[in-house]
Length: 296
Image 1 (cartoon, rainbow, N blue to C red):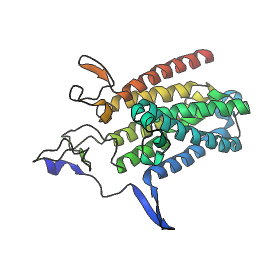
Image 2 (image 1 turned 90 degrees about the vertical axis):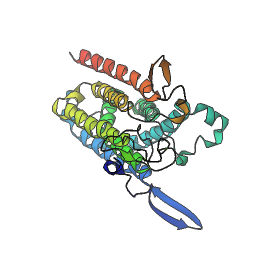
Image 3 (image 1 turned 30 degrees about the horizontal axis):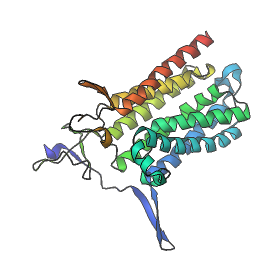
């Protein structure tokens, strides 16, 4: 059966490394995913703002020049929110005991849910300072977000991190590293779901297609807030589904909790990813309902 499994591709986390002044500086695929994702997102938002016919009363909520200023706030929201979200949601005890490592984002550890909350706060402050409609600006942001999610998940795969649970499916991947191979036996290497690629497909490509369809074909940009709700519900649903095959974080697993539930009653429970995604789904559906009701 091992021959049917997919070996991990021979690619490292660094695109290239330069040595300057006696020190090595590397450009990592994960950093490149952030950079390219933000550029693509900025381009999409600018194109949406240029098309006044897509917006309420055929009037764009901001100019393309304003969109460039917004990018700075988005970057701050993603980085700070993603990092503090990881610290608070996944390893609070460790980082409270080692506060000097909290800002060491180069050592890994970012939370999408924390990043989303950071973007929300940054976007609200930006709109408040410039007197823009936060709902319309938020609609543009969420439409522009899935390409960055797609690239980020591909980078997770390249980094051989956030892999899935063990499986014997034909497309299972043999990820490197002691942690990924913890379930290996003498006869068989441990193969796992490539859950990063599942998320790239669901949270990235499919969610992107749905949001573009609703924005361009169905005119949802004319209903402020509706696309925000669609994004929250769509991401929450897809993430909730993938969590069934994604390996939970080590701090949640134990001999009595092998599935890594962060909340459990008897044999039933939810992972931390599902716990954080559930309110996204509920809030997203409520936002859609409220936006459509106001437009009726």
